[in-house]
Image (cartoon, rainbow, N blue to C red; front, top):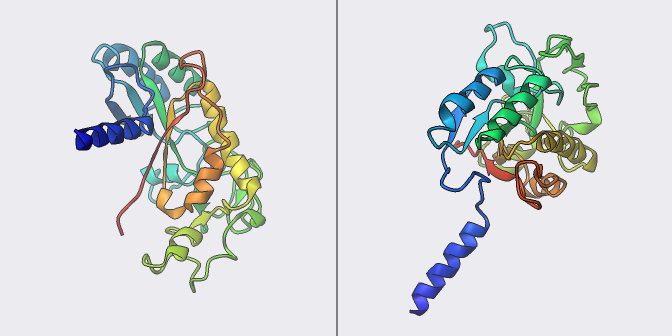
Amino acid sequence: MQVLLLLLAAAGLCWGQYNPNTLPKRNSIVHLFEWRWQDIALECERYLAPNGFGGVQVSPPNENIVITNPNRPWWERYQPVSYKLCTRSGNEEEFRDMVTRCNNVGVHIYVDAVVNHMCGAAGGSGTHSTCGSYFNAGNRDFPAVPYSGWDFNDGKCHSGSGEIENYGDIYQVRDCRLVSLLDLALEKDYVRSKVAEYLNHLIDIGVAGFRLDAAKHMWPGDIRAFLDKLNDLNIQWFPEGTKPFIYQEVTAH
């Protein structure tokens, strides 16, 4: 009997840490990778809600670099230039419309949040971005956020190239550049605040949670620090005091 009580207590504790914010009996979240916001809104209304789906994970909604060689690869969406909601999936107005329409039929939106880094170090300078914002990757200058050279980990990384050279070295994994992506200094409260500002903007629009891209490459304390700055979810669709659902990407190397 004692063992059973311990198991039930453990189950209760686990459930206390796991609330995807889906409606009752709607636990499936579909990943509509690279879909346009207008198409997702229609999918929520026509198929997902009638068939009992609980949510949609969407591609990163923030402005990214435009890459033409190769031509417009999927991974350009994982190279932020700013936190403006402006991508090939649609603009902020279309994103808001999607979130509202999906929420209204009981299908919630979960955002792929790219906050570990900005674009690649060789991204150049100019306005070749999905919203036309100017940036200079060489100078670590992203005025649309704004971030400057002070907001990156270049001086903290101790590998010879500035890249992750040894995945067995936890300091390289979290302080150096992942495939040349400019690594944000999330130990700085300013950077944490800009990340939280972006995520809170999405929360206020009505999203239900976030997938944290490249979570392995951020220090757990830094993740906790910017998550602690997040608002409760929008009470238009969620009970008062509801926290965003957080899940994390951890790749194997």
